Image (tube, rainbow, N blue to C red; front, side):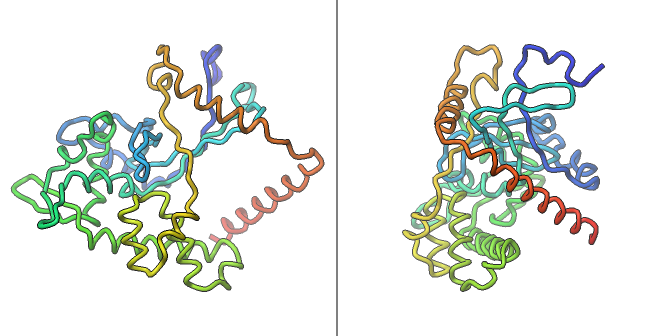
Length: 301
């Protein structure tokens, strides 16, 4: 029996997912175990609709092995996938990349504390904080939030209950740490980054983080580092999010909003002029060089 038996007449998609070490897989049961509500244990491998931390728009994420992954979508005008003896008609590609869940939780916790000018807001339990109307998937992330939000929150324990309140100083320190991590990564990507001024690299790092935080936190971060927020806002690209379409949630639904959105993007890309076939050698050689570099790095390790 082949793996694709029974797929005839059904739509298939190709997704690239990072392979986790065995230690992470062994710990996944603890990270995804049942919470007080008993709802988070069955979310492993699910595509869930959550609010994008910057725009607030419904966006696709994948929860697997206790970790959250951002979902990216790519599609050329024409193409298919050959998977062994099976052909997937749809030539699009989904790529799941690791994602720090604090970005997702930041606007939710900010709203939940109900901060006012004269006080820092309320301490609340995670069950309350992650009750987001229209987004039931947040309750699958209760254990994830409990494991990570102590980095940016004040936590009080009363008996067996824990109460969280977002802390501005902790959030700013966490964002500065993210900037330093991104800067360090940029320096390893290309030799041109190594010769740039530190202020230029900081600007690029903040621009990248600006895709995942709202203007309030972006303004605070720019003020702390000494960067012009208007310049960062102009450089930060407006990314197209990948919403969870209705037919993906319910295959028998008559609503086709998500599919129509995908078709619009596909048609807009198909109108672009294709590159000449003779240039494909350069692309192939580029991937061959990249593969050799990966092999050398693995050998060194």
